[in-house]
Amino acid sequence: MQALMSMVLGPNAGSASVPVGRSGTQVPVSAFANLLGSLASKAFSQTEAMAAPSSRLPEYLYQEGVLAVDPANPDQRAERLMALMQESVPRRARAMPAQLTEADEFYDQLDAAELIELIEEEGGDLELDE
Image (cartoon, rainbow, N blue to C red; front, side, top):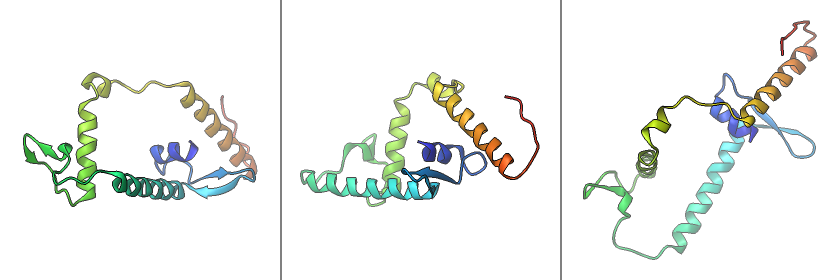
């Protein structure tokens, strides 16, 4: 979860690496993106192998009866799927400001604790309000 949150927050706010396993081995966040890509590729291959052969392209690739994307381009197929998924989210929900959840507050506290620990390791005497 920490790696995913770091990816969402980006390089300025997210951690560059996260501890993994019992030993707390530091693993770069990019390694998790690689893992997700690898798992997704395997899932795609397995799903394709199980699919029934068809001479017709999937319906989601069409818009108003015309191909909306190049079926041979996986990025375009993914963008088309993303666009369809966004259509199902009500506009009001997309426009609403983000609300903090308990998980957000937990990670904010965790980030503050890591910052304090880093400052202490560096020998700084900066005081932070909680």
